[in-house]
Image (cartoon, rainbow, N blue to C red):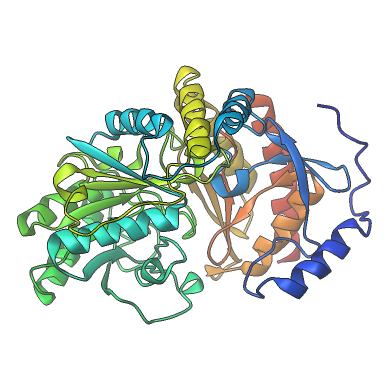
Length: 443
């Protein structure tokens, strides 16, 4: 695909300004936009996108980890076009071959025995459905969640979100109990080694359960926290939690909306780094499986999935078009070993980012797994998160032709499509190194 000539860095036309004014006039103030001068992205190919002014960018955020394989992947666009030419929509009231085929593949890949799959249109809706199943199955509205967590923007998922920046209300239909563990390098257990850290977190969980009624419904946890800044516990923590939870009959829901499909490189699912006590009772997924199409879902053991005793359907979940896209996308991912590519190229990118951050006072930590990298920025010498530094890096990276994301506080999120090449990883790391130096000089 040929691109129009790139404007010089720093030069902007009025194209985006007019659209931004219209955006502000009709959309909510809380609907966040990146950049002092927001971008309109008009098309993409591979790991690149173009804005309305014709400038090309290396996409290191993939629509919030959603463009999992590549922009305009021929296999996916072909599947969508062919299905759209047959029928766009039917609902779950009718048999749907693409939905059944995708459910069969996901059930087999999930690791959950006797698995059933329910499709939704987003990760928020998937987590909402998982909470409905867990609280119905256990006859309890008590839920365990991790501190610093994020599980969606619906009323119920906001109620279990442990990240204040993304929780606009304290009202909730659920009683949420927050526990330690997902942030390894901060908090009261940060000084411990991994084994001691896990032991302390399990003791904290046991103490929490001793303060709650015995009928807690479930623990919901992200194996790697997304909005929380790509933080993760030592491998094995959730497995240790699982052993204790099973003693009380409490379910484990693994929120794989951002970690699923091999993005972490070492595992297909994030929970597999914590599998000593077996798979979770439920896992939720979304984002990358549709490669931009609205696909989410829940996988659960049959006895849990089938516990609802009221009628239910999904108008848009399992749409023939989105299912066709997801089937094609999943097939491409498996046939081309994109999990292996995430491990290899992601490892290289993390090495380059750590080298780039070496000696910079503004960088507290570079962390991550596979093609899921977080860079935590602070006020030098204080350890205090620096949102200003994160904004500077975001803008400088854009000027250098790379789009990245933000997490909570001063965290940058870097998550390119899983087809990222070595050359593109090197190119992006070079731009990010320059951007980090800009923020370091300004701090």
